[in-house]
Amino acid sequence: MSLPRFTYVLLFIHRDDAEPESHEHVSIEDARYHMNLFDDSDADLYDRIELYRRDYTGRTDTLLETKHFILRRKP
Image (cartoon, rainbow, N blue to C red; front, side, top):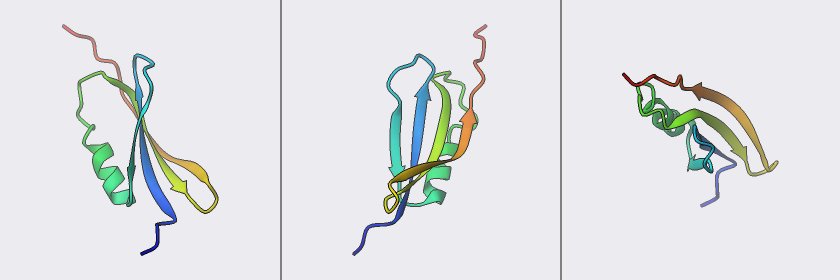
């Protein structure tokens, strides 16, 4: 079984400048599914989530999509 040429990486950028978290997926559909779980998030934990395509042949990461979060004021 050969390794895939591409994988898809979600990079979670924290609002407090903590070290970003990354999660790698073997399909873009799986990566987008997990990214979209944060559509209605009100946690204010992340500034943004970035979706990259990682190319193991060319050893490059290409930014495909960014989801920005608006800081919500607490009542």
